[in-house]
Image 1 (cartoon, rainbow, N blue to C red):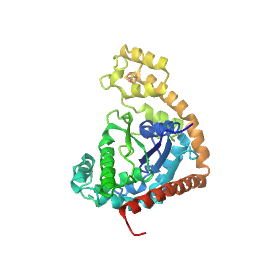
Image 2: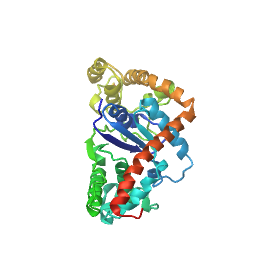
Image 3: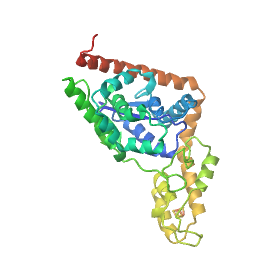
Image 4: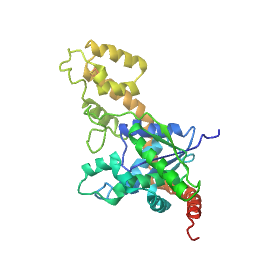
Length: 329
Ligand code: SF4
């Protein structure tokens, strides 16, 4: 079947993935493969803007790739690779930086946020991050980028940068990517308050054992107003219920929705049910993960092969870019 176009998406190498990563990105990555030619990149260079040490970079890249593959990203169909394996992206980043007004970068809310987060490490890479992101997208002539509302300003920035470049050099070498508005659910951590994340240690790893998963689920914060078993609860404010809606059957969700409100079901039972359903859902993933992880070399082969395919696309784009810029051949 003819594909609708080429999708690009990148994610920083954060090691073993958790439920937030799965629901927020990976699940969508897998689905997009049916309709699009997909280019999925582990953006290790972007990670350098914030990491304090590169000690775990290789292992984190590997673990993330294993999870992606186990979740259903198909390297035969999609291009799965590591950003630094395609050095052309650094070159394009430099050329794009020449058509980027500095004020546009300093005005971006994400830059301001990072300056607040890491005031002692406001490096150039942090400022130029959206330019590198633009290079990532356009190097592979991607038509579509799936983004949530909070990332929309970055994609708009990328589109404007492409327009500036094409106008400056009177070319159509770069494609203005379209935004594929994607509903990226905000997955809360087991604390029920903050977004699920490793740094907050409020996450549930996809690769955790069934028992570890059960223990994490039992720690989940529920409706804070429900103090005793006999108190009626409010599933609308409960993170466990939000998760049931994703991983449990419609009948079970309906039952919990009404039984919680009348104290017919207690939180311990409710969480046990969720843990069971989640474990059942993750069973095939874990089996595939174990199989993939038993041959680490094949994971690197996938990434190297993906890098080769990505470099071939990059070479074509860079040839057009250099010609348009009238750089000496
Ligand atoms: S019974 Fe379930 S949905 Fe209701 S508050 Fe407890 S954990 Fe949440």
